Image (tube, rainbow, N blue to C red):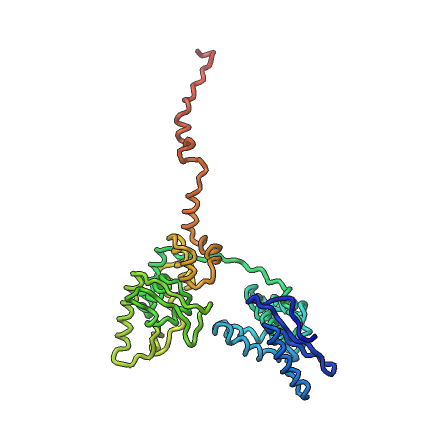
Length: 385
């Protein structure tokens, strides 16, 4: 029987089927079909090619698998993720390029990790390389180019968990004021305020358009665009805070004045202040200047603005599920494990809830105990009495 039901299921919990047959001492096998009928149709087509004298092209080396993998991956991940993977691929091709795909073992992957560590690469970077390599071999197994994923049993390196910096309300206000003194001050201060009141990711803010803001209904829609897809692919709606609304209306007036008398080249809320017809992609340098003008000694990346929004929502008692929907998290797990404990002020307020019966009226204070003690009597010498 050439059609087989595999022992495992895919991520969608669908049973996997494959076909497996021999012809002229050559084995033809392919897995990843979602039903028996689908596997039978694919097997029939494969047999027609083989019996007619044609061959099924299969990548023989790791390098041969790269292009089919890109075609498969491009429509399944966000553009930014795809771009980052393209940058990581050359180092993988350098190590595994000429090696036959079925011959790559877990030992080869461990050797690759050792080489990257000798090059003094960070554990986070190496783990990302391993994740991409694992995705490639999962694709190879699903397409029948490999029988197993050699990365499956390779442990990821331990990474140091750096405590995130959460700006205080005073620091946030100082940052907004400092931004007004930097280049493109009004736009930069508006962007910081936008991030602090919405918790959007940097790229999400740069791809926001005026049509996404409904000033009448007081809501903001974060949605995918033609050239950008949201991380989880789901659009979301946030309420428009009155403070943010006033800031955006002020910036909208300046935005309209900048393009007055001409056809508007775009609808992006934030544009490149040097080339206004282009979309803004970064405030990196001006953001650093804003921190200096604000007198902030701690270096806080712009991603801290997202932490600021989420932590303040938690402290205000906003429901975790609501926060997750606002910021685009697929679950509340991240908020429960990380964001609820980021703010030092939140930790201190939680500690104040601890009552151990000391100093709360159930036990005498130390000063009261001393005051109630009888005064020590003067010792009298019997000889001098």
